[in-house]
Image 1 (cartoon, rainbow, N blue to C red):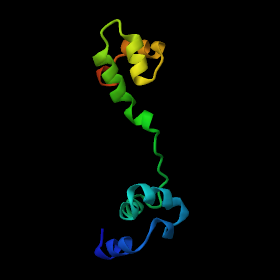
Image 2 (spheres, rainbow, N blue to C red):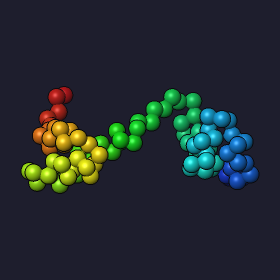
Image 3 (cartoon, rainbow, N blue to C red):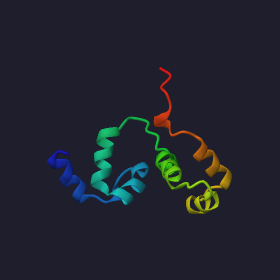
Image 4 (cartoon, rainbow, N blue to C red):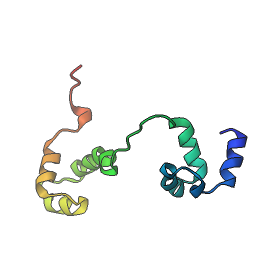
Length: 101
């Protein structure tokens, strides 16, 4: 970031920013919010839910921890149903699936 933008970031609070930026600035700070605005400003950007972002890794961990009989324990640990655990362990990980194109 340019020096002048850093200086401005140091001088303002989250409340000085437009309302659409205030919550973000309270979480990651004004300087980082300005960096994101500079990078993504003008774009419509979708943030997937955290569960969606972490689902593949979670499913990989479940497959790794699965011993053939611990459906219930894994369901409790990961906050899922036993049926969902069964579906996860029966499905192949996406990196093992053949590319169609």
